[in-house]
Image (cartoon, rainbow over all chains, first blue to last red; front, side, top):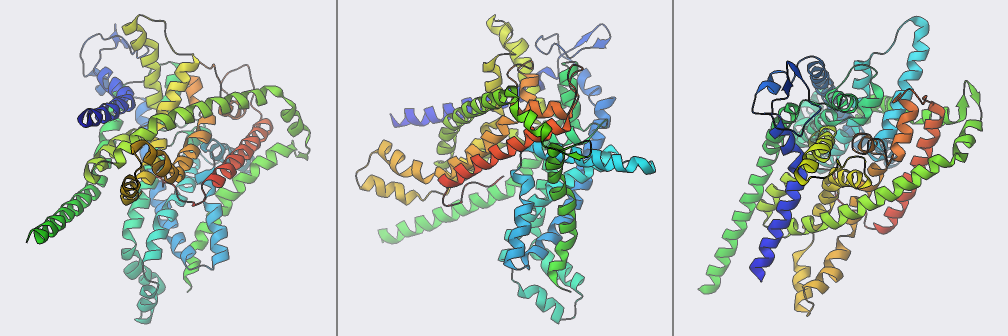
Length: 291
Length: 269
């Protein structure tokens, strides 16, 4: 009975994993499908297997998709670095604020995290439309890429702050004071004493900012007029022509899995080590009792 | 130099790009063509069509949340009872799809429901039905339910379960009297991570529902982005609708805070 219960558990987990991965596997399988009818490739019929080909991978970043990928990478790269710098500095500042100011700043910072994406998206859209309507008088306008950058930096900073703050709380306040007493300039004290201590928090924040930006659809959809990032490109081609190159799934999925596993392997290894240590201790205890 | 000055660049940024944009919702809701007026606001509120969509969205989002909870709780419970290292690996498997571009995954469901499944089972194409919309909504939000549940269940002190067993409770009683009440913070944050995003998930009705079963998010989206030639965009209507949405979010947060007295719950990955 117990064994039956255990295998039932694994069957359930397996079924749920299959459910979660089914669309991803489906796209990856069909990325090797021959969609060519004549010389024109049509992705609108993703359900019919015509034969094996690598052709879809040759064209995966041709044309608009390639531009969208470039924009996605540029926006994600710049916005996550800027957000990490501003966010880390902000966290250091907030940590040394008086309680009342700190609570006020932190509650405004939480807005982008609790607001529905949709609301964040439309507020940015209205902001840029408003600013551009003022700027037309002097024949200037904020382009799509700067708008995307501002929006992505804004929704990423809070995640950096809330990753760095817990680390700062753990690290000692004296470190900075000591560095100052020993003759460091404030900036040098920060770089040499504080930053190394909170580095794990900063790198978590950076990875969060990077993934939030890479994964964003809703905010980019409202903010950008013509320039497409990967997710808005996929959405518009799925809606208009009902056709998206399924090879995109593989191209996004493989780096994603590699990155997530790389980030988590260290944590897993630590947990495993902890478990083994625990077991050793337990064995020792048992040995002690036997004597 | 005081350290709090390091926060000043951010505070300027925050005011310009987090606080001010929020004010635009109020600005456009109550200002038409430079004139302050509540006329458009009242007119939008009186339009029953929007309330109808809101009610339907709340029902669809509630159904999605309940299904996610029923499917997700066992997942989180099983994972939390596994050995830490095994559970760590399998839980990553559950959360990987969260980071995979969700528009692409939704599009894939379109292909599956429109071509693959009907062909295999000899049925009519399934997109455009309420069932299809619910299925994909559940699919999109399931990991967001499992994550906080798993965080809360794996923190649960296992000696409490042993105590309950020692005091004569069987497995079922232990679950309902000990495990379930202690996991309420996880349940609460799971519900908040699914319910509100589900109301605004405007891509799913467009891609899967063939624009049937529109959610409240679609109503707002259409006031800002030209989706078809028939309807124009109107920031003032859209802002009013967004204000109603924010009120709904506030109400649901208040209700949830009432249940989540410990203020714990799960964190985002």
